[in-house]
Length: 120
Image (cartoon, rainbow, N blue to C red):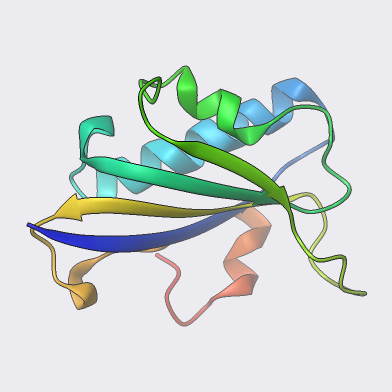
């Protein structure tokens, strides 16, 4: 087993708790599925959200997916002029047999524009 970092992001439809939760859960589930992981394989997760998303914590969405015993933290992304709005970003540290080149980084919806070089 190796420790790997998996990146991902999604653009949220609106600054509501429901929209943030749904988008975050979709992103986390896709990261797990594509990389053949379970919540037990996840060491920790750092969530950032753009400054315009403040209706709820993205980490709360992950806890309801089985991450109750996983260290999770949220932060606000730097407010760069022209940055993609309503964006939740993730960096998950995981234990996996995948090599660095085999790890799939997941970018959903409008966030695909952030990393076209590695987006699935």
